[in-house]
Image (tube, rainbow, N blue to C red; front, side):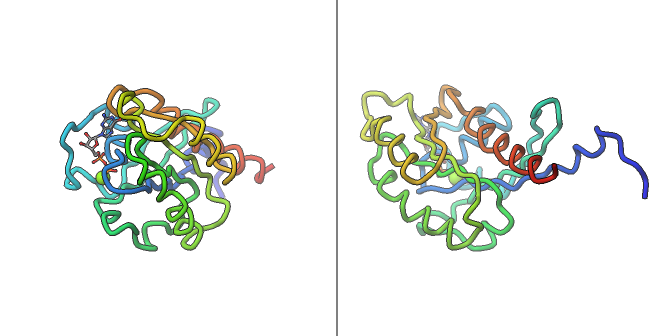
Length: 184
Ligand code: GDP
Ligand code: MG
C-alpha cells in the first residue's frame, strides 16, 4: 500500500450535506450564493441542480462538501429517501417572513430522522433576514427552537449574502471535528 502525504489524505474528506425545508424558502439561492456567488430574483425549480460539490478549507485541510438541492421535490412537502441516503449534515431552512415555513420545521425534522442517522449535524437556518419589515418569526423564537431540538442556528440572506458561507461552514466544520475525533 502506498503511503499518502498529508495533503493527499485530506482529499478523502467528502461530506454529503442536504438542503431541506418548504418550497420557496430560498434553499436553491443559498446554494447558488455559496457555490457561485449568484442570486436569482425569480428562481424556478429549474435552477435546482441535483448536487454541487464545493471545496472548503477547514484548518488548512481541503474538505469537499457535496451539497444536495431538492430540485423541486419539496413542493409535495417531502423528499425521497434516496435524497437523505448517506447525508452527514443538513441545512433545515425556513423563511423568516412566512410563519408557516417555521411551523413546518417539526415535520421536516421528523422526516430527516426517519430517513437518516439521528446524528446528522443539522443547522436551523432562518433565511431572508433582509426582509426586515415583513418578518413573522423573531430571532428569539428561531434560537429557542434550535436549542430545544439540539440544532445549530443562524439567520441568513441569500439576497445580500449575509451569513451564507457561515451557515454551510458551521455544519462542515462540526462534521470534520466529529470525524477527526473518531480517527484519533
Ligand atoms: P427554494 O424553493 O427553497 O429552493 O427557494 P428559491 O431559492 O427558489 O427562492 C424562492 C424565492 O425566494 C425566489 O424568488 C428567490 O429570489 C427568493 N429568495 C431566496 N432567498 C432570498 C433572500 O435571502 N432574500 C429575499 N428577499 N428573497 C430570497
Ligand atoms: Mg429550489
